[in-house]
Length: 322
Ligand SMILES: [Zn+2]
Ligand SMILES: [Zn+2]
Image (cartoon, rainbow, N blue to C red; front, side, top):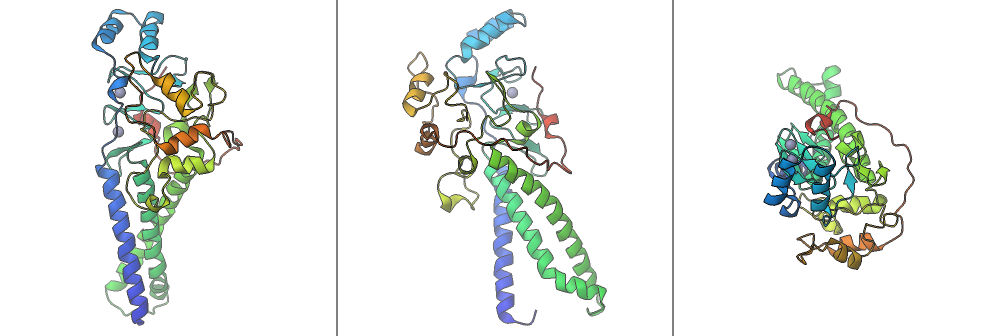
């Protein structure tokens, strides 16, 4: 590269992409997954009662009573309350028990060996940005290396060992670009449909039955669920997702009589007998908008393309429910 201006632009672009890539990778690895809040844990008396009751209707009755003031709308395949035996808690919607972490993880997406962490509500935005910046980083390297890569094959490079570095660098960058773009494309599709990887493998079951787009609020709102309302934070790995991870607005708000349709209704429904408001952290105003705005609650259920090539089955880390 002869031109000084070109060198400066490339240096700045390279270090900017590298810094963003490392920052989002760091945040994905070191952000602890969030676990269900104490409202979802059974009391000592309830645990005792459960131990005494054999599996079956009586067991379910204890759980139903414990769950009646909790904002949960999903069920197991057989219509039972979702309960984790390991953590002894009622699973919030979209929460799953990770067999690797041995904990219930809020809005669990999958357990990722590349970051040695569970990807879920607390770090899903960071994971997406990590995929995006690592893809841009690899594409930048492949693009700037391309002209020297061509020279390598046309004998235009000086005959030193460095010429082999150029070849290997291009192959590595190109190969990572291909695999990252398919994974990133798949997660973009998931975000647009407001699904987690686990929900794409197995659709969530609601009181009225299975609904693969049950959490989808329309493209724009689905994006804001993960990235938040403030555009200035969208490209930065700082937490800006909406909600508390325990309860989620669904597209069934106008169909399910038990689901609150206004923030006021929500508060009255979610009050526990002790006059305690759930969730402990109040819903952000932005999320209240999601609940009051009746537009675009329904969306076309176009059959999405499958983009799971090369992925291990994340459902294997999720404990089975019956
Ligand atoms: Zn659990
Ligand atoms: Zn995990």
